[in-house]
Length: 202
Image 1 (spheres, rainbow, N blue to C red):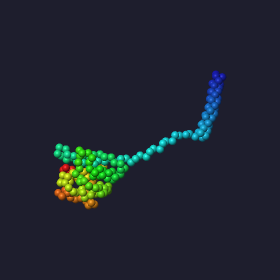
Image 2 (cartoon, helix red, strand yellow):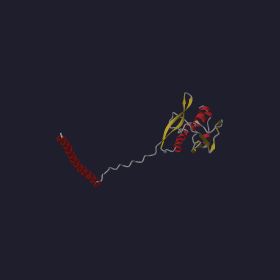
Image 3 (cartoon, rainbow, N blue to C red):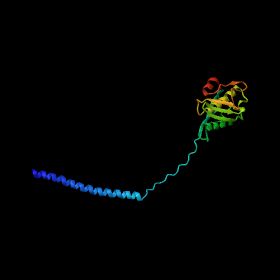
Image 4 (cartoon, rainbow, N blue to C red):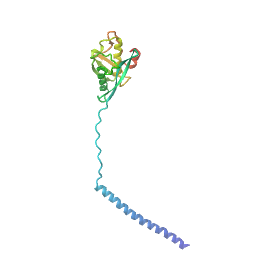
C-alpha cells in the first residue's frame, strides 16, 4: 500500500516536469517570434496607399418656388413653379435669385404674371421681423384691382417660399406700401399668406 502511494506521487511529479519542459520550449519559441515580429515592424515600414483627395463640392443649389397666375375655368389661381439657382445656400441670395426669375416674367406660356414689365428689385433683406422686399415704382402702375391682387400674391408667396409662415414687408422706392393702385387696395403690413387668404380674392 505504501509503495502504491509513493508510485502515485512519482507520476504527478514526472508530468509536472514534462509540462514545464514543454512550456519552456513554447516560451522560447514565442519570444523568438515576438522579437522577430518587432524587429520586422521596426525595420520594414508598412506602406499605406494614400487616399486621393476628395474634390471640393460646389455650393448646393438653392431651391425655391416662384409664383405665377393661371386661369382655370375662369378662376385665377396661384401656381408655384420650382426653380434651382446657382446662388449658394444663403436664404437671402436664394430669394433674390427667385425675384430675378419672377420679375423677368414666365417662360412657360401656360402661366402669366400681372407684375408690370420693368419692375425691379431694389432691395431684399431678411430681418428678425420678416422678409423685406423693396420694389421699383413700376410695381404700382397699370391694371385694376384683380391685377393688383394678383401681383401682390405673386410677391408675397415668392418672398415666403422658403418659410410659408414668414412675415413679408413690401416697400416701393424705399417706402412701406400702404395702398396699392389707383383703386386703393389697402394693405396691412406685415403681410402673411394666412391674412392674404382671409382678406383677398384672386
